[in-house]
Length: 306
Image (cartoon, rainbow, N blue to C red; front, side):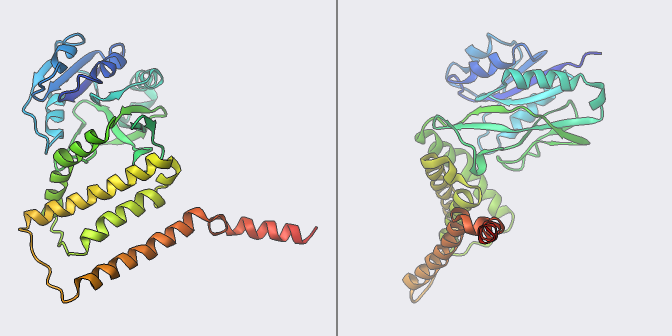
């Protein structure tokens, strides 16, 4: 018996990219459900060309996944695919989804992860936090939902999970203004609240450590330098993100003071420590002999025996 698929989108002012998303699923979905979060542009007009299943929900920028779960509750398909208005299902992924949900051999699997290609500032970003950026988006109806605890959470599904081979495409940030605006109004407020709710005790040096650590993590450990200038700018923006989270959490705590007799020396010490960490990662990531000592020794031995 053929399994049916409901594709659920939660959208807010997505007129620029929404049509591409809807076109990519029109032949895949048995049912398209769109939850509109008080859009003021042409989002609803575009949506009406593809589905009559349009539900209005209050816009909740600090709880983005509440309307997504609401959309799931309206779905009637055997399977649900959760999609954002700036995401596209390529033909290869659509074919794989159709085959997988109707495969008797995979009857015990309740959900599927898929890798996501993030297109940022016109380029597919292949490193840092941006790839493979695995997302759990396909699941059996009634077996999955978002926890609704914070904006960066993953969808959770019960039972056995598997992974699809093909990629979801995310037409992510097109401009710096868009990136900074979303960082400021959607993510950092929520993350500052989560940080404090977890009982994190902020210290003055976190104003340095948090952004510096985020930059090192993304640029070196996650190898964003391999994405060139895009990778550098995105790593710096992530560092700024971390600084905003600290500053907003600090604000929520009443802008407390740090009493120091020699604040400049304290700051210098923190910057010096982070400088050492920066140098260590530079050495580890960018000097070949440090990365592959066994290969270097082998080459030396081979050269010596000839």
